[in-house]
Image 1 (cartoon, one colour):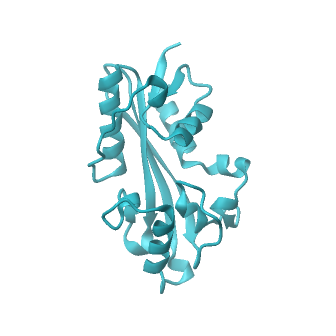
Image 2 (cartoon, rainbow, N blue to C red):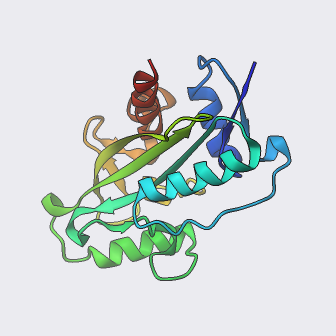
Image 3 (cartoon, helix red, strand yellow):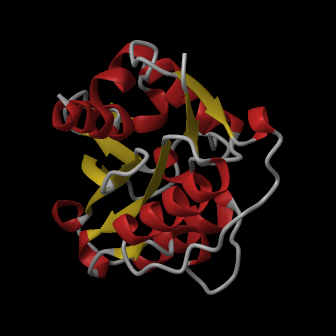
Length: 196
């Protein structure tokens, strides 16, 4: 079976993709599975640009079908901030806790009905000798007034985002509930439809 590379060194993300892509006609592997230690700087201004930068770089490196994603948090009251800069919102690599504290601080005087936000993901797939294919999806939510859950490492905004569909905090969703609205899974399904 041909390998398909997930352009990430994040084991949690790679495992999620392996789970979501179990029925794809490929053996899904991460960069670490292939012993690749290279990294590429994400210099794009949009999620799609960053996803393409990663997919292209690792496709050229491995000569294998390559899938990458870029995602981030968009807060409507802050005109879409932090967006692609999610982790580097303040201009340096922020910790999960700093990201939460900074978001809540910036929204201090914003009323509940204006605290809408979304987690957005864009996936990019490059197959040999084909143009890149993109798909995107988002999880809509409302930001709480204060942090109401422990941080899930690497996913800070889940501790401050209510999902209206389930009327509960993202961090408190069950696996089944999470699967129903995973932006990565939704984007992958859209990608799959384009491949048919």
